[in-house]
Length: 423
Image (cartoon, rainbow, N blue to C red):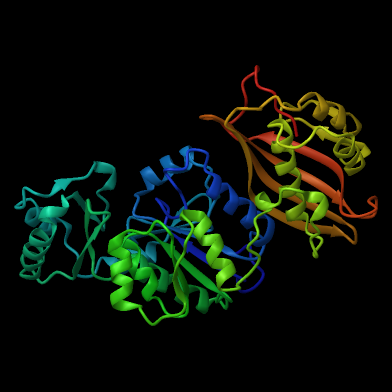
């Protein structure tokens, strides 16, 4: 949060599974649409928050499997754990708050009396979360009996049942909504109240997000009946909560447009850059747009035309340098020739590029330094490098000139010798 100079323009708080991430979309098209939108328009002045039922262990597994952006804040384990930034620094004040009237040993003893409760894996048993699988036909009876049993011990706990399969016992002061309310208080204390907030979910354990005051809310198009029913009973007359017609991350984009809280056309939705004009000269938008063109070029989704090659040539400063992650250097003037040779080499393959953590700083009246993680994925193989680009407007008739590109591998994510890595 410290990277922002003032209040966030927008804070998106989103569940992951079947909200931000569509597990029925093997090419991750909706997620990649959101990624491009966020990095082009929002990363520099807004906050991205993930709110997931996953523990830190399986949250990290998901990040290794899907093209998820790095969030500013991660709420995990159904609101019982909060962490900040890429290093995931824990919020110990929140953990102390949850200790009040919480006795994990008693909860473990009482839940053991119900054979219908099948413990989830050890990674999902957390300091303030005890988790089970429970079949839907038994759910109402078991939840009622378990609640009565725990009440006898005067514990302040709650039971959350979601997806028709998962039961979590949590401190009464913990859930996704109360974790978000805590973050709001923290932001307010630091003079960083977001100008707009959008919460996004698909299942029962997301319901509490929609109870937080002064937020917009979207139940994505594939939301489960348990959440839709909750909304019908508790938020029927709230115009700031909608049920989108689009699935998962595409539903989030749809909600941004519906509530008019910011740009909602993803750069991935623009098919012809020549007919598109962006009103604001944005270095973040520039790098996102370039690498989308680069992806389409290698997938042969754009025509191999002299016009595109000429535009590329004019975008690169001829006396500039491209530093490959291996450390080798070549003049920017040769980048056009390399691009021409790579046309269509990924055609028919599950190949995509996404940028993460785009940050920009103006270092002169007409010069910008842009830093980001550039990811490439082909099938299940993923590689990433930290990329720094020097952009200039003085050298360009319109838009930006790429003066210098420098890349370094992120640990463990370098390519193998047989794989072509360029730009």
